[in-house]
Length: 326
Image (cartoon, rainbow, N blue to C red; front, side, top):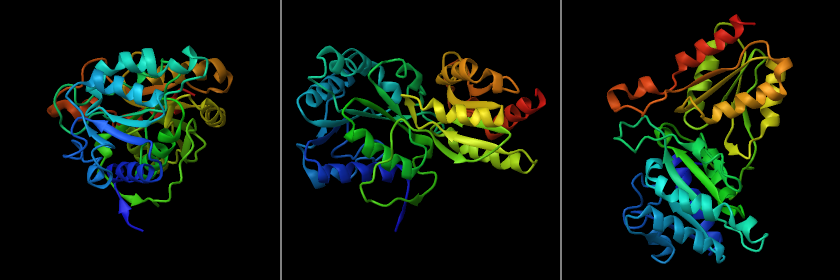
């Protein structure tokens, strides 16, 4: 079995679902002839034709609206926003229509649509190309927010997202698009949505994260282990609906928690997790919850970009603070 990157896993999942479900269509800017800016849709138009892999105008609002219309009429569209920073014009259609149609029609109409967006920093891109704004979507009822952190999870979660009867935001951490490879069977097996993945067991501190920061979290756990500290690492994967039970079970075991995310600290999704821990696990905590995040500013250009992103060292320091405070 060949090893593939995360971006290749996305392509593989799209190709599998299009081959097995004729209602699946792909649309977006440059997704057809060029195969997408990051080549996530490379070869799909040649294989499935121009009617199923649609190059659209440079108009995110129209892309989002057409996607809602297609889904409401029985198709399963997978739309691409070239970068997450370009997704703001799509939000009106997503929040006001895609996320509400099931409720508005009392279940008569559903919107089985997926919006894919390359997410986050770390590739030396200019302004609007390095956004980490997933928290803006976690406050929209009726909308799933999913973010894979490995090739295997990208493949399985994207299959599940396309098959879901409700709209899904699928954010792809572009920093790890081609960072490493792993074996991913092209067997059509979806992974469960709404489930956190425990990637490493531990007893001293829980590290909760998602997307590209899973890499730093696992590296931090390795570094802590060298000092005799046992860290449990949880990949949230589906931010909403949140599988808080898995997080709570871990925090009740370790008594300590470090939440890591790339978005700015204020009102980031880590704040929601920290609040839930305070509400439901307060008496099990041995130390205050720590957050390692981006800063409350725009992500800087490439010279300072890596200083903005959460680092392995910052995660290690936060974990040690939870032990020092207990």
